[in-house]
Length: 121
Image 1 (cartoon, rainbow, N blue to C red):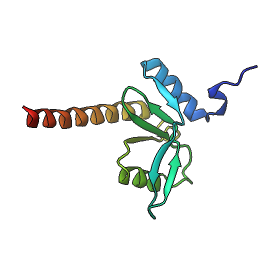
Image 2: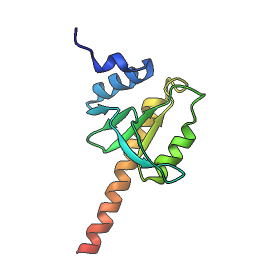
Image 3: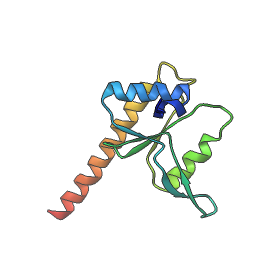
Image 4: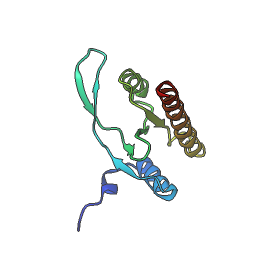
């Protein structure tokens, strides 16, 4: 039997994948991204999802023991838009959190594009 991409996902990742599918949002699983760490060393990380139409990564936080703040800081320092979803502790809120961030990033990009277009005209 052929292995499914879902076979390698955690329960929380599967929940997010199914919700994205229901919303009609196309995604890629663990698409690598090149970053520089705090010591300016090159690294390749693979956030859980890449939302293709939005150009945004999603990291599904599955453990309180993992240092997500470090990861967020590194992504921010590299100019990577990453949404961190704490599905395991925000069982009723993570979908609205995701949608709020998608709206924020989309509005921000539109604002920046409008500024550029105004300068060109």
